[in-house]
Figure (cartoon, rainbow over the protein chains, first blue to last red):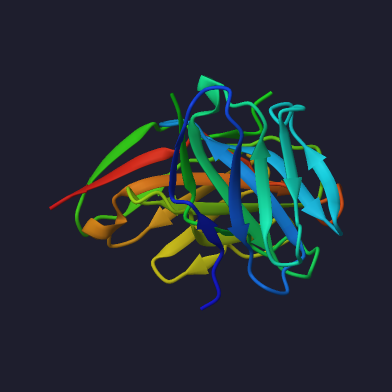
Amino acid sequence: EPEVTQTPSHQVTQMGQEVILRCVPISNHLYFYWYRQILGQKVEFLVSFYNNEISEKSEIFDDQFSVERPDGSNFTLKIRSTKLEDSAMYFCASRGQSPRLNTEAFFGQGTRLTVV
Amino acid sequence: AQKITQTQPGMFVQEKEAVTLDCTYDTSDPSYGLFWYKQPSSGEMIFLIYQGSYDQQNATEGRYSLNFQKARKSANLVISASQLGDSAMYFCAMREGSRGGAQKLVFGQGTRLTINP
């Protein structure tokens, strides 16, 4: 069964460093998302991406964040200068070709980012 | 304003009993979809069931069913004959339909379900 793959599963980084979280969405999916979940809290939307551009972004997704789909298969989230409060589980998700409401988003297993 | 509210932070249920996890939502969009996801301790998000705002019947998927009461804006998840493997965090989420194809999911706070043997 096709799946969304995220690497690494766990990343520890020093405050102020740049990190890149990588995702390989399900091939032939067209809609891509990043969400984050601070430990013990709800899952929060960061950004959606469609047709090679950002569709929507949340207040959390400030200038320190960026997304790219560099080669048609990978989908990356970059945090330019990490802060302690960026520590969270980051989920990548992808959705199929239909814009219909009932198409589920498939989530990757997540990358746990720890900023020290 | 909270769009998705899950009022039960934790639930404890005996194995083989049925359990209902509550979810209420708030939207002015007539077209929306409601989802339930399961998050086991390993952390991944597993899709369970979907209910559309225009669906006439409550959704069912195996042991999962959704008690959809549109007038009350509630979409409670019912798990029948609970199993030890059902112990997990459960999230209710909503997608609103009027914003185009890349509609995001908005999640509730989650309910931690523990099944006791």
